[in-house]
Length: 254
Ligand SMILES: C[S@@+](CC[C@H](N)C(=O)[O-])C[C@H]1O[C@@H](n2cnc3c(N)ncnc32)[C@H](O)[C@@H]1O
Image (tube, rainbow, N blue to C red; front, side, top):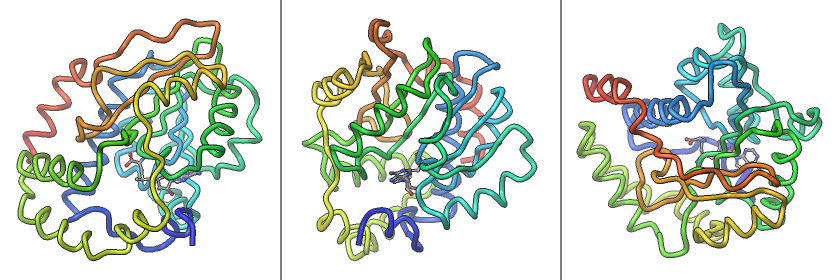
């Protein structure tokens, strides 16, 4: 069994419906906070259920949602039918896209499920389909020293801030007994420190630097921003500071 099979099945990585909704809203808000402008063409690679894709779609020219899991693609096709500037595609369809198709590519919490050679191949493809000044954002990369306990602590803190602490505590017990934990132990995650992912990106023609903040809730994981060489590595970009009103919105529903 591979990670792709795992994501194609019924997964239980969110401790409750509230967690799932808040998680995807946070990711969408973080993506909106790094958009270069409203004319931007975005690829959200490994988008998962993309529950708040509407927030992103409303802030850009076009949004392509890509996920390897067919079951996930079918779900989000139904959910995004009303979004005229959004389409859902497979990774194979991205491989077939013309050069320079996107101004921003986001792959959040995805590269840990790739092998090193798959990551290198995707970096080449992402570089090709980026516009010359476009940016690639790799979010939620798991550094080598960040294991399940560190992730659990970050989830408990996030859940306490958003009113689902009890659900998170119960969910962590279920996760400890779950298929995800077994898969993580059996298949492993691609864990990379900052210097490693920057060097890998460079080896594929991308100049990269670390963002000040990670996308999403876990400050112990990394976000890397890259541009096609010969551009210099992008300035480290604070993710959250640019959208205070979006965060107020999120807290007001907590
Ligand atoms: C942890 S979820 C992240 C979802 C979303 N990006 C987020 O931040 O919540 C990982 C997603 O990556 C997708 N994925 C894993 N390997 C992939 C690949 N090679 N190509 C495209 N999607 C992939 C999985 O199907 C899953 O939906």
